Image 1: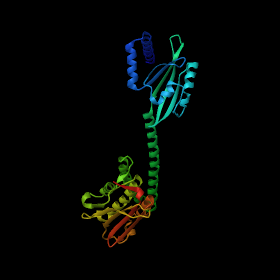
Image 2: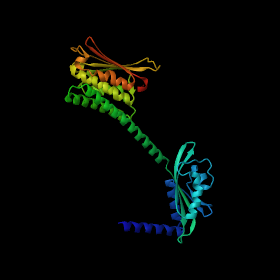
Image 3: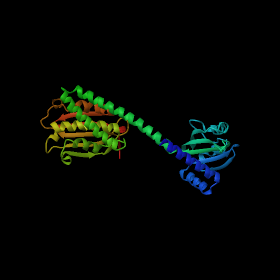
Image 4: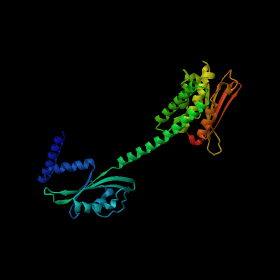
Length: 344
C-alpha cells in the first residue's frame, strides 16, 4: 500500500509539472479558482525579489509580502520583520522556511502561517521563490477559548472537590456510626450533583433560585404544587451560591420529610426571598424557609443539620444565617450578599 501511495503521488506530481510546462490555460484558471475559494494568499517573485504575480494577498500582510518594509506590523514567535531576511536565506540555501505571525489590526490581532519556498526547474536551477500565507485567526481563537475553558473547568473542579471534602468532614464529625454517615453523605452528594446539573446546563452561569428549590424539595414530595409555596424575588444565583444554597435546601427538605411538614400529607413549606439593605450599600437577598413542625421542641433533639445551615453554607457565601424553632414553626433565614446573585 505504501508503494502504491508513493507511485500515485509521483504520478500526480508529474502531471502537475506537465500541465505547468505546457502552459495549459484551463489548468491555470482552475488553480486561480482554487486559490480564490480557499482564501490562500500566494506571491511569486523572481531571484531578484521582483513580484511576478500574486493572488489573494491579505491586506494585513501586504507590506510584508510585497516589499521589505514592515510598516505597521508586529508579530509573535518568529518576527514578521524577518520575512525579507528569510526570503534571502531561501534564495541562498534553496530550503523552505516557515514563519508564524501575529498582526495587529484595528479590528484586533490576526494570526497567519507563512511559507517561503524555493521554485526550481527540472534541472534543479532556482527560478524564484513562492510565498504562501493562510489566515489561522479563527483556529487560534478557538485554541485560546479552549485553553480558557480548560482553566475554568480546572478551577471549578478544585472548588467542587473542596466542597465535597467539607461535606465529608462535617458529615463524619456529626454522624454516630458509619451507616448514618453513608446515608447523610450520599444524600448531600446527590444534592450537590443536582445543583451542579443546573449550573452545567446554564453553561456555568449559575441557577435560577426557584428551579433550584423545586428540584431539591421535589425529591421528597409526590405533589410539589401542594407541598411547596414560593413567593418573592426570583434571582439567578452564581455557580458557588447555587451549589451551597442547594445544599442548604437539601438539608431542610430532608429533615422536613422526616420530622416536619413534608412528612405530613397536608403539610407544606413556604420559601420566600426579598431584597434587604446591607452594609455594602447594595441590596442583599434574604431567603426564608418556613414550615410547621408539630411535636418537635428542640432543634438538637431531631438534628436539623444546624452545622451545615448555620455555619458551612453562610461562610461559603460570606453571608449570614439563623435557624430557629418557635411555637412549632421552624424558620431558616439566609442572607446572601449581592455578589452571589442577580435579578433577571
